[in-house]
Image 1 (cartoon, rainbow, N blue to C red):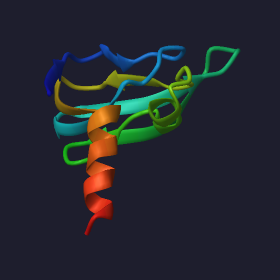
Image 2: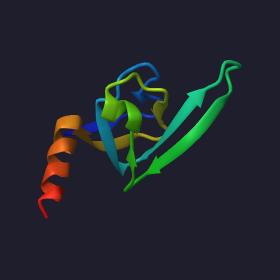
Image 3: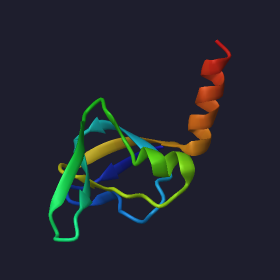
Image 4: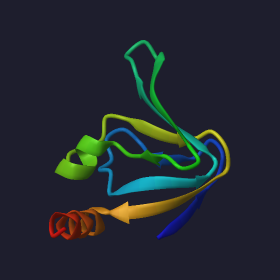
Length: 94
C-alpha cells in the first residue's frame, strides 16, 4: 500500500509495534533513539530507493525501540508482515 507522510511526521514512534516495512519512493526518513538526557542517536537515514523499519519489532511484534521520522515530505510503499512472509515463501520455492 502507498502512504504519503509529511515532513516532521512519524512513520513509527518508540513503544509502538512496527507493522510495516517501508520502501522510500520519494523523500527522506531517519531512524533514531532518544537517550535519557534527551540527546538523539541517529541509527539510519533512508533515502529514495531504500527500506526502513524497526526490523526487530516488525519481525517479533515487540514494541519498537526506534522513532522513524520524515525529514522531507515522503512517499512510501508499505509491506505488511503477512506480505513479507508470503514473499519469503515464494523466494524459498526457487
